[in-house]
Image (cartoon, rainbow, N blue to C red; front, side):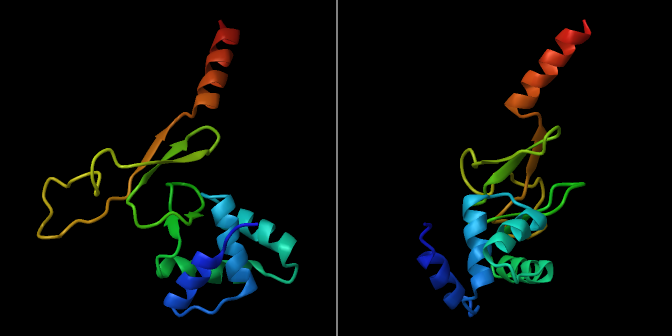
Length: 148
């Protein structure tokens, strides 16, 4: 069983009520980071049969607006959500299978400095690196060998 006490405290700090659905969403994201709303809905629905997709979206939006969860928007894909917030990490996304992995800043946040900040005090950069994950690279090599 996952310790949800830190999330209960966060919800109270952000003046969000402690609901079963909200806690189930947070628990799901803790166990399955980088999940989309459909996956979260299916997992929560197995625990709380009366939940609706609308309730999931409403909770995801409320949690993301308050910084309790982070929404990741890979181009051409559904939004993904995670509980890892506040550390300015980035993401690696596989073009083939869609796998997502976290990658930490190499030195300090933000990881990238704009050439001209136009007077902004930059404290975060959101970057998604695209490529092929190791299993998809192996599959590509196998496919190329078969084609020769």
